[in-house]
Image (tube, rainbow, N blue to C red; front, top):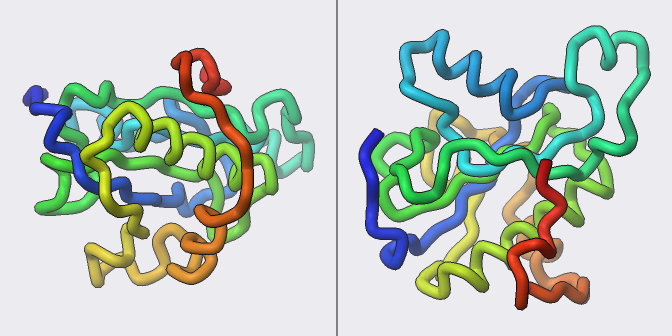
Length: 166
């Protein structure tokens, strides 16, 4: 994997897994199976369904809903939007156009966290905004994403431990 200058990160892209279940390890395996050298995303926000079985049984782990799992370290160039990876961070929501409230709060919080630590970030986009081959990714409209980012949620990023990471 190739390292990058994180002071030049300007964009956050939001994705979805297009599956109703999974976690960072699941996606990492999917990407390794495609011949990639690691998971393409920097962060994955869980919905509580780690496996197909738990989703099929309708048995989510509510302690995992809205939890961020780390993907590819931000110091390395991610692999998530062709031609747009060098100066970007990529967040993946587990789900297929349906997300929990906990995931959406976590997304908002995580975006604010990244913006606080990488002040060069000037925009937050959907995968669909950069790749016409992915018109439904992440399953959120641009309008909804803008509204989510303008909701008055109070966060404090004086310490990196403010994130709910596992």
